[in-house]
Length: 299
Image (cartoon, rainbow, N blue to C red; front, side, top):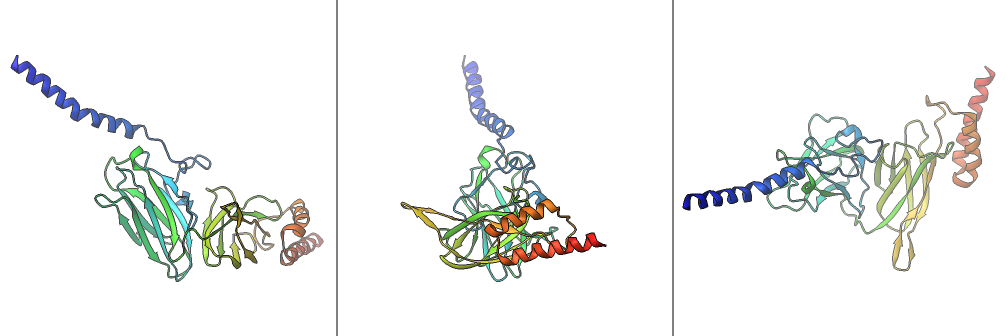
């Protein structure tokens, strides 16, 4: 009888130890991917070529996790010479043994720097100084084997040091002046705040935070389009006590010397919208394009 009871006790102890492990194994086998894994064309963010943009000084974090055994998360940022930047991961899940690695866009063979979660850390941050205007890739990966699943969540933030995220925000779309469609890849710089936007985000959308009310200068650059420079007065509005970010769209003119061909219908559409959305410099670009097409037709 004593032997039988001891066997029963051993069985109970064994199940107490094994059942949580079985539960953990089950949960890691059935994780849910974060929204950046399937957000655009069902293409995940597990490689730098599919890195997502992250908005500078944004109060709202990007929410990620490691939902399978080979999962990584990649972000892409545009930085300005002489500025310091911080990538921050907060609210780490209990199994989120995180590593943040920084890579230069022209050399991804070795990271420039990295930061690790240690012991009972609830956040991990990596700060660097930008020596020249450049695009950087940021890799989020985990350091412990089989450390993936629903308890590996984290919130990602990107800050330019010295600017508070509760300063003003501007957002909107960058579009083609000819087609009115969002431009899939470009860089935007407003008073030293920058972002690199690619096709994996909402096409053409940008958001920058950290601006103070006053005159600002915006510079937008994209392949196959003329560089766009515009000065305007930045000011947020209020509805009651709620702050409403400034919404502003920009329109780029196709570079007449690029390889991309522009149809006559696109030019007509561009002419119709110029009086409302563009300045005289943009209109001059369209006139140059028309003159070039006339010259080509006369040959």
